[in-house]
Image 1 (cartoon, helix red, strand yellow):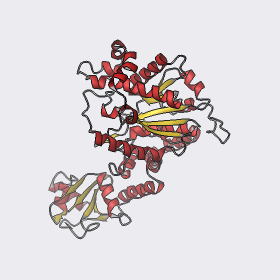
Image 2: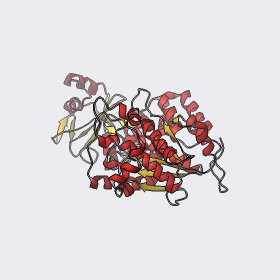
Image 3: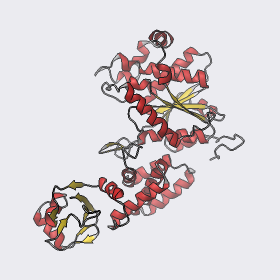
Image 4: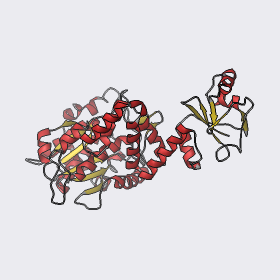
Length: 428
């Protein structure tokens, strides 16, 4: 694969092929034309919905694509939907969204601006631009909106889009029905004001993407514009990528700890490791394949998952944070917690079954039952007598042992392990 853009403006020969080979791209309005356009510098935009004050791992897939396009010499536009966020995107939703307040949307927009700036380069407008569509939608009169944009779309055309058709049984308000027009007008504005010729979005946005292209082609003769989409990323069980049993995995460390994200990737299947490493690792695919082959030689060592987890956390937060996650993970595996600070201990505890007991001490037998490591007191006694129970790394064989406040990590915290793989955390 050719190198990224150099100081003389030499572009990657075929970044589309690279993105396809990584398993990222899905639909194209015209694949050959998109590939041809990207042989010279283009302006490419992607939208981000401010429905929360943090983006999620699913959004980070889009960010990595924008970053690659930017490194390949193209100018990117990250558009935050401060205007459309007041409406709500019906894509992928079975019912109407609840409105966010104007204050909440404005707060989320500012949070996403800061977050996107961590991963994309907006230091030079020739490389990247960060915009908020609330800056123009808040100023456009409704009559102008209807005449300039609503007139272009027929109801029959809009009903033919999956994003609308999928909601006809349950119902859709005019408000969400109009979202497609608003997003289309965004692309038209960026096309006119910034020379933006390409739009990229998730696969569930295909109806909106093609509608955007339709508007530009109706408003502009010989418009040189195209759209393409990213595949819906799922795991080997068909579950949406970046979703855990606790819901979405946010990029903001206050909303989702780096260690929890690290554990998410440590626990992916071997096939998912191979898919995800191609998505997130910027190295040449031939080098990545060597890591996949090395992992496959001895998959029980989970070398691939460890490399992937460290890579993701390092990209999202920092190498130091990723190294700390390794330390925390090894502490649990090795039953050695002395090097962890109190905050790290609680992060590790958050990733396993944990319990709070409203008491200052518990007998070891009662503790095992309470945290779910034994089904009964009889079974708990067997585990202790067999030497299969450890507390904070220390083997416990005394049936009368008391888990007492003052004897734990930072006084009241206890990691309890039964056998090699069963863990629980107890706080008195």
